Length: 112
Length: 115
Image: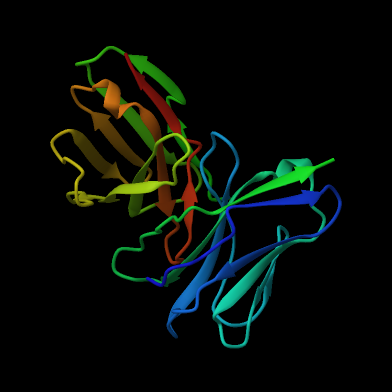
């Protein structure tokens, strides 16, 4: 699976959009971009995933660049409850092991 | 939908005892479940993949005789930490794969403290 690079931490003002970047310059054509988040002392929560088109659901939007070498997770109106570590994971869908490899993630702090 | 529970949420035990952690998919059947471990200020590390009705597949460095995994039904997988020692103290998290999809849903985690 391709390696990802995320900033270790970010701050965001409550009510503003949080834009979390992820670099995956070695991504291959059959690898998807997945985003999970982990609130302190809880299990990770699935947010969204995509292949090459931009995706949106009730939680967030995922913007993938045309060359697929990077992506951005957007939380449109961040709240204090969005404070968490956000993990960007790139992997082949439906691969033999279906494994998720977690990196360091980005610690997002939403401030009042 | 896609809710995964774990029990217990927190356990404290003495060194040398065994501890069983349950992972249940509440509203779906999961042929595949995963067990992760997370030490303080670190990321999740996959320990093993559990498939219903077959032996678990362990990651390199994880002792299969120490961390016993049973996946006897489509909604339940158990992890037993045998002869626990203080270095086994960690946050244990399971996840379940929703059938027909490629998305894992995680349980809330179990914090194990071995004295």
